Image (cartoon, rainbow, N blue to C red; front, side, top):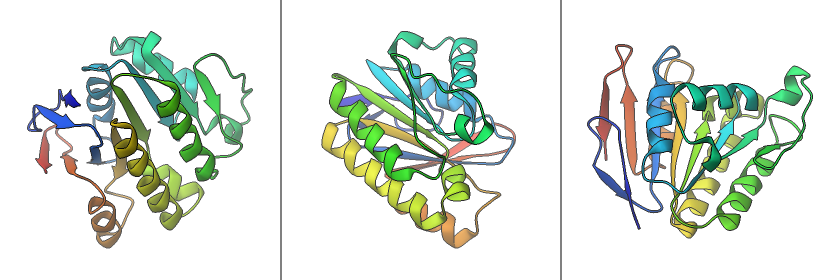
Length: 192
């Protein structure tokens, strides 16, 4: 299955099973790239949010005019911030931000329970590494990439280039088919 992409300088389409790594500065325009990725050529999508709450994700989707009826949100941060957690039809939670096994299980459940073209956004690997550690975040990314390949889905993974050493960035980049390097001015270069 082919998926269209609406990301500048990226291939027009990518095959199912493709993982894209978005390497960005801390203040980069990641929301624009993320929402363009989610709203293009998709039947359903999952946002794994490790840095914002489900409510903030919903606000972002609304602001960027993304069809929220196709959205499922996995909120990993509300428990850390002490917010109430009420699972709904399309909002789920894990026990804690460092429960990366729970995150991978939730991605698998989403991919199993939904048909058609499915996209997953992981925002972000940097936060996963902060709450767990870099090795656990790497293993979680590798596990999710295996699930994307198995289910013919695609994923966009965020990673902050200002937080990690070059060797860590290089190690993560080797996992991915496409690396999008977002510059501070909002332009992007793509390696595939």
